[in-house]
Length: 385
Image 1 (cartoon, helix red, strand yellow):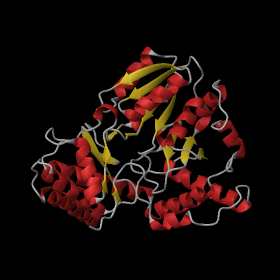
Image 2 (cartoon, rainbow, N blue to C red; image 1 turned 90 degrees about the vertical axis):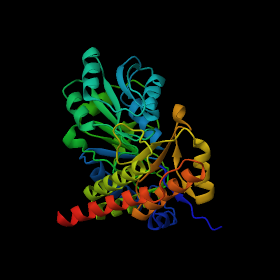
Image 3 (cartoon, rainbow, N blue to C red; image 1 turned 90 degrees about the horizontal axis):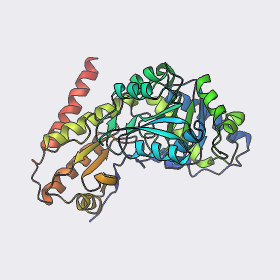
């Protein structure tokens, strides 16, 4: 039977044909003035999505490379840092900081729970010598969104800087670096940017952040942001030429839609999926779900790994499973980037069919009805507005 693959994972995400075709262009010499101009255009476009007048550096790496760059450039061995650990990627902040010899204080939360600003206040009060607070906008492993605006309000009144993992959250969730006072934020190309993996971004704003970067005693070479600043908007090393072509195309598409409408689209799709999942009698995992993905608890009578396999191999629908201790216990449906309403409906229809095939009775069509009603209600409100 003919099978079309549909990727509904929070990275890599579906890539528009127009973006794919940009990657097929001739590869320029990376010191060619034409490519340097393209890098400058990309840097300017990135500032618009990070909502900053600061620097945005383009790295040839995955999002984890941007996270490591943030740690290597702000942490010295022995420095006190605070990391928010509420999932796999908060855990990654802690692991990276320990790798660079930091004295790490962890705000440890149950996976699926969200950060309360009081927890940050308490941690800073107990650790007044904190140099950096590392946290996460969207915890991709759980589907939780954190209130970065409130956290920034607390951190900016201390000597510490705030570093935010926005790898999956940027563009899907509002992030206002300059308005909120976020000092450093990192992201990756394979999420809401609608691009293949391979690029990472580090945005740095303000004197406070640069003082911390200059003070860092950690070893750094390829990820030394001082070198990137010196060459800005060019890159000190070989640029990922064809990926930069694709980045410029992606940024043009985002600007054409407007970042505000992109935020709203992700919010509408996430709400519709949550409504659909709950109409099937299934339970959401995140206590404060965001706009990046919907994490769903797998019913006890269903083999979670087999569920993902049937969705993928029989229907071509690729969801993400749980990570670490959540493996086999949840699945995650993304609505990041190049996804439309029919993609969302197809994803939910797959859940309905496979659940029933595997012995978990859910009311066929109930989820789709709830999702369609959610879409129609949002369309109505949009027309009234």
